[in-house]
Image (tube, rainbow, N blue to C red; front, top):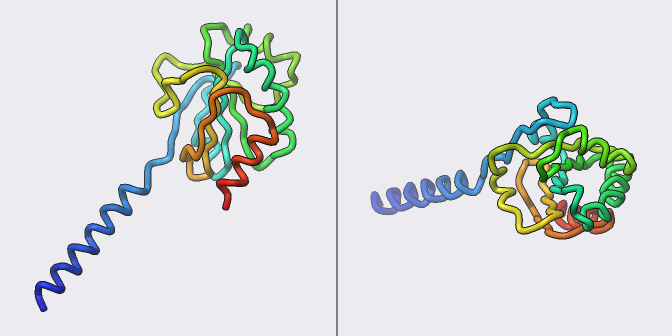
Length: 157
């Protein structure tokens, strides 16, 4: 009988240990926006977040910018965040983005890698995070508004 109680306690402890390991900490980072103000990923906790890494010299990034703007305009419950992944000044990034009427925050990449987002395999790269702050999907290459909507709908289930 004591062996059964001991085994039950061991199993309960094992399950609790595995559960706590499965509950990963939410991802977070803080980068400056193009006005020099800090923005944290955790500012958007509780919402779906689309994090898009781009550069002005990247032609697929340029082609997808209107899709990101369209997606943000049609999905107020989701937050798009752009991250300028190049060595340029905030003024240069703002000037580049101006013709696109970008409707979401854009941040400047920092000096240290944003793990687990980096290293990037190429640009553009987009990560979709659930409201708990976990990456549910990652995509290299341009995305469309419909593609992003489909990814989020698939993971909401």
